[in-house]
Length: 353
Image (cartoon, rainbow, N blue to C red):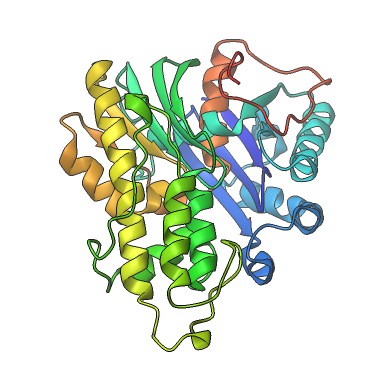
């Protein structure tokens, strides 16, 4: 039995968890900053790092209490060291180093993106048994900062088949949500706004990029902006439209539904093609955008392979996924030294651009 204290502070969530044997969630505590950053329409880095400093001690202590364990019950300390906001990452890494040094425990640096992959293999149903892993697997990782198709041949063996060449899918959701003035974060706000809309009201473009597995959402965002301009004199994607400046009411629900459909259709079609070409045994969804119900439903109905998706509370940033990934690194003897530093733009694959 191996218990790992995991810490995650890559963006605006201060999180700590105790994970046993790489799959059992003994505790998973997350302190969210959404209400703080909502006024800015996005994450304010300096504010985020300061909030991590205020919350980190309490979050770690709560994780220990919920797991009904103490410092002596831990076998290792894991922490996200990238990618993410440098100031935020530093808070978590320094806390993890201090604990590991004081308790003479192994320190394990974990890539945040790798953590998202492992969110699918946590025992979130509390069955008491580790979820079965089938390799090779394909993961569509979609979040506010990343959109990647990852071929997983085995633990720690990854190949990036495709990635966004401009904005990530989650970033596109955030910008369109701000344009339509429907709220923050953009993903759930757009999904909510789209419920009463017609997904076929607008034929927004879907970039195919010559059959590659890369993604592009810049043309789609511009197309949505052009539609919004028919109802308002808004000129930038980060500026909320003001329908009061026009004589006609903007069809927010229809625009949101059509935009959401365009994003999901591209994500599903490229994932399906990659899964078939590489003959994978299962497909995984991960990252904040994987919480989108339309994406989940279309992926599961369109692919012949089994499709796994984490529960909603494991889609967004959390420390449980970091502990799950760390377990396999510990088993392989891959621990970190005290020189471990944060890497804001850390790629999942070392030779990845």
